[in-house]
Amino acid sequence: EDKVVQSPLSLVVHEGDTVTLNCSYEVTNFRSLLWYKQEKKAPTFLFMLTSSGIEKKSGRLSSILDKKELSSILNITATQTGDSAIYLCAVGETSGSRLTFGEGTQLTVNP
Amino acid sequence: DVKVTQSSRYLVKRTGEKVFLECVQDMDHENMFWYRQDPGLGLRLIYFSYDVKMKEKGDIPEGYSVSREKKERFSLILESASTNQTSMYLCASSKQGLHEKLFFGSGTQLSVL
Image (cartoon, rainbow over all chains, first blue to last red; front, side):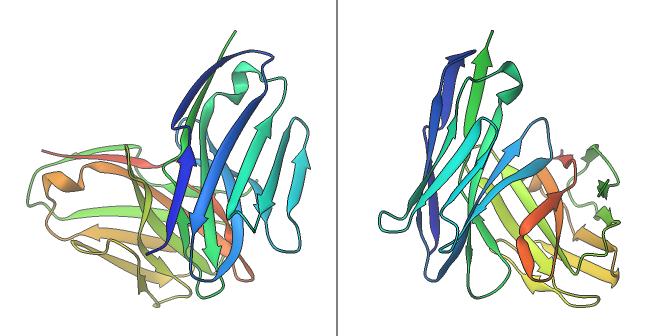
């Protein structure tokens, strides 16, 4: 059975801190790893990482895929209160359209 | 701006009722999905659809059915609601060829009493 595990499950930091969120996976035929941010209700897409694109960066957020270790990290530098959200990691396979999601990391950034 | 719209934000139903959750997307996406989200369990896939009138079971289809009569609309049906179906339901869509990039609706919090 496919599995995606995120850690930590929750994290509380102060504004300006740097955080690292972790995601490890076990899937049969890996195709992609994705990060989503969920504020309030609707998750929104952040990054997609594949064998041909193992590093992505957008502003203060960056992510790296380690295919050898079957894991990924999401880094957020100089955190702001607006970064408070649940961060979801999901993995896609070569067969089919479904994604397997992890439990999520609840990040709280205090002023 | 792309949009996935779920008909209700909050819904309260009684055990045994038939429940319809509606989802509409305006992006002409081929793929549509229904997930439920529960604390400690993350997002779990209930059903998905590649095309009009096509449907595939996800990981937890029991107690649910779906309907996709038009490309833009994907309905989730709880035939006889039970208390263990109390959950946040999220609809999503994606386009063929980039199916992993999901666009989500704002969710429906369903309470079954």
